[in-house]
Image 1 (cartoon, rainbow over the protein chains, first blue to last red):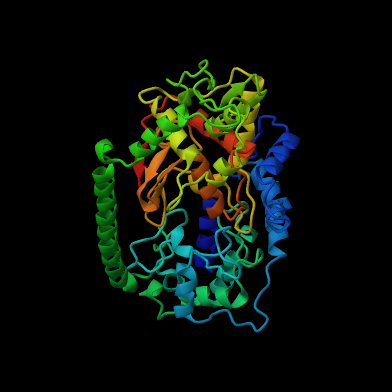
Image 2 (image 1 turned 90 degrees about the vertical axis):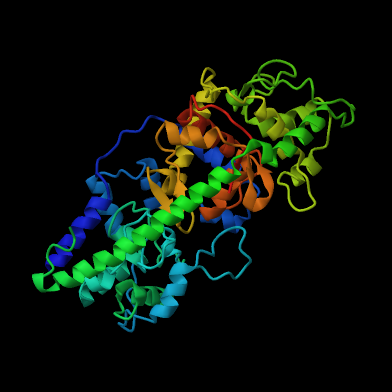
Length: 204
Length: 276
């Protein structure tokens, strides 16, 4: 229970100062016109991908520095978009999870159609402490499961975080992997196993 | 901090973990040193293939083309007809004849169309060079930008449209969209961050990191064996952001360039540089 409190504290800290910011007036209509002019040759399917949803709009307008009320609204909305695994099983195969974490392909205009997206976790996080090539945009996840004593409640929390990071931290830098359909249910289970399986290199 | 609640009995384990972390840290430092060494090694102007693009660009600038069969040598880049010295360091800028803020590529296309009466379809098709495909635009930008070497980046804001486009650029920098919710700021909003092993410049804050970035484009990219301009850099950023491909020489790219130049004001131009 105490670890959960600490975990929440880490989440809150990483959200940054939750101050509302007054922005200089920029004519939003002109910004929209510029966006249209910049992606005029994109297909309608591609254009639809950069239409902002409500959460993206608030994070954009505040430069990610949301007020407490805005943060609450975002987190409530995004929490409602989290789907727990119907079979109640959270952990898949950690070896497959490594492949998902290590795969940075998918979703780019240079990708051939049908490319399976990866989670690209290593781009931003340390995971296996033996892997030297990792990014620092997100916190280190080394020993993630071990540090949490493989607590089932914390496995559920991590599912939520991966499925929709903004259900936990409004305007988090991290993608909403499940809600935005970047990763499917099985891929998220495999990544969770990579974090929580005692045999995973993450916990060695 | 996170481990302070671990019972004392587990302390030995924690110490063991710290040992592993220390080993990983040493390996990390070693890789960073290697990367630095590689950067220093390739940063030799006499061996920079980007200067071949500068030479080709000089020829292209003087070449008579289009229905009017004239060169680009009367093209006004903001300093007067045909004047190249320092022009790039003050671009993008407002051009009264076009009533538009333009970056160098937009201006060159405008000059090709109005001065040479050249159909630019083929030039735009070859906007990015590749194996067996030279790019007039990359070569021209290398040649012209090189004429600003030693000069400081001067973001333009005297015309209302320049100010407005800079503000729009700032909004685009923070605009989160696409399946991954990424904006420019997702990677370039904080100092001292890395993606994998690649250090990321913080472009959200005016100063040294923005100066070093903006004063080193156009650049010769070793991994692509090609001279690349800011147009290509931003196109590639949007690819990684999981946004659609931006139109070449479009308003949004110029807006971002305006904003980034504002962050980089005072940076001393030294191009073409050479990068991984």
